[in-house]
Length: 279
Image (cartoon, rainbow, N blue to C red; front, top):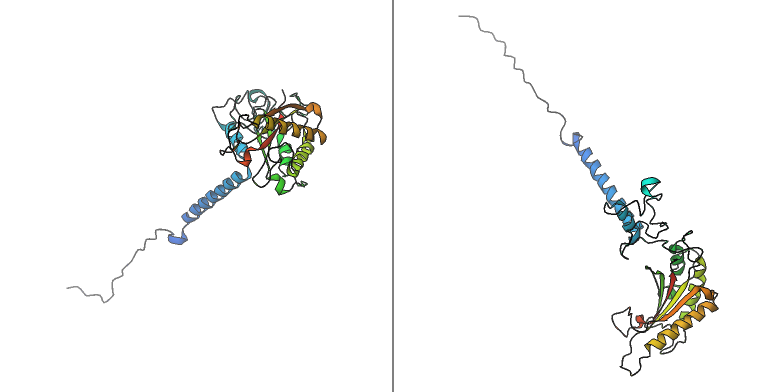
């Protein structure tokens, strides 16, 4: 029988370390960076949506749309892009299509300098409606137009040109009731349009609109009244300095083109002054 040893056995424990885990790892940093990048992109998108107009967004979308032929419309550089650039929504090309299709609807048409010429008709030199609109809407830094006057003006760009709509409200008419005698409000509006018209040399047209009569009359006075009001505004524009040769036509539309669903609403009593496109 061998001798017994009093020495305790040696036990070796091997501890396996699987690497850093929990908050000591680096994976969360990558996820956090992705989150911050996504949030920054989101806020940039929100800022851009707020800083651009509806027409600018449509013009940019039209440029990147694969269904729009770029060559005959707009583009960037010489050759395949027709010698224009992608920012044609700001300064539209000479053919008046800009970043839109050849025959765009009003909703799909890029807004800008379509047909507004410095020589009153030709397409060699093109100006922008935006400066004229800014003046009329009191957006310029030096504008002295009061808010009381501005709330009677609406502008829009159509196939015919820049339409400046001067409309009455329930509390502030443009003419004395049933007559073509202008109120002080209309005189102020006409003066504003006459002064602003110096920014361009396009021909102008004046149209008169009135609301419907509350009763049926044997002879509808709407035609004569709308025409006489339009003539009155034409004369006022001339008196304020607009050259007579620039006034291309004067039209009375009676109550045929209502602006408000209520035929007798004050909003239907309005004057439209159109800065006609060059031909």
